[in-house]
Amino acid sequence: MEHGEKNITIVDDQGNEQLCEVLFTFENEEFGKSYVLYYPIESKDDEEVEILASSFTPNEDGENGELFPIETDEEWDMIEETLNTFLADEDEE
Image (cartoon, rainbow, N blue to C red; front, side, top):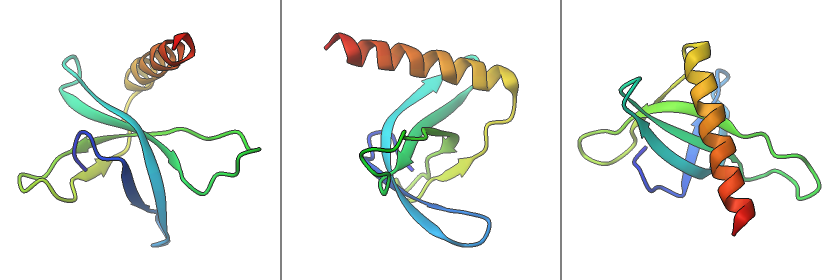
């Protein structure tokens, strides 16, 4: 995972792969982490899209960085606020 990627493949606990489109990535100095917000590409147009979030660490070689779960309620609150700002900015365009 790198900043600026358009698609990522997520592997669940059962080993199933799911292709997802990256909505956006950002860094947060307070938590000292990079974050990615993404959604499954296979979502149907008439379905509500579930936006997922993970923190990530880019690999030094720029390939296949590692995703990590969000660990605290404070992180979730910050991510939700960032997403709401992003969506509000998109609506204004």
